[in-house]
Image 1: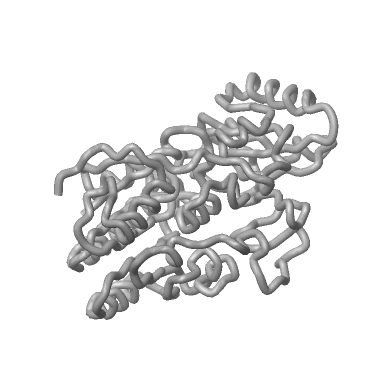
Image 2: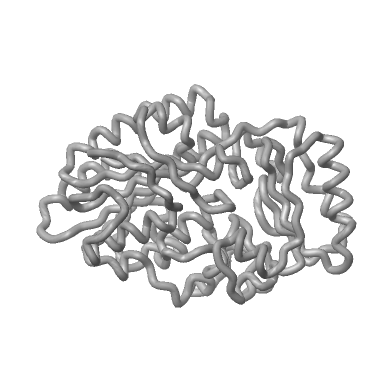
Length: 347
């Protein structure tokens, strides 16, 4: 198969797959049914250990699992659905929650419906094919999974060997099929040990073997990621405690991006981060958001993100971070190309 440079992002990728099944048109080089294998946290450098030659595409401006997986499956930008970081402020609940885990500061949210995702259509409801989604068994039936994978047959797995056996059965069925596999283990290793660790390298060797097994099926296999990874520098650590004495409405975001909504004058936040920027020699974005800036950052604007107007957005370009006590050696969510560029490998 001949490869060309694809000028697209992760949402465009989903839209192209949908268009291929429904209209027979796509920018991708596809000629069979598709297996989309998303390896959480697979960086460009790590992907080179799987295949030497491949194209790269963009992920979202907030390169993090929660907004990317949601956007990929809904084919909507974070500005539309309102999940822009692992910890996002919700207009519905009027507080910062973790939408994927569906928990608030008080614990699990006990509603029968995922109130943030209610009303959105998924790619599986629109696609002209029988769809199958493979996700780890421990959250295959979570409320979040029920919504973002709605319209597909969800298959919870304990190991990738189960995935191979299940796909073998699926391929014997007649009719068009679309298969999505989500694999989060590399992301966990990259966080815990760092993306250049021996542990992550060994995991990639295993993934290469698994990909070679998937290639045996008569499908177009697409391998990609939700974000890349960067090694953290503990000398560029900012403790989360810097916000405790500030008069703020909420703090959303992660370790490499933050949305801080001040109750009054935002200059205090600016001054703190300008001081930290100089002291720690940080390369960071500090910006007060308006409607135009939110649309640029989150791809679109809706009432679901109107609370971000006048908030201060902070994002690291270098390997600094806000320390939330995770003891991570690797992370993502920043503004570096290492995190925002992702591999697109097509077999």
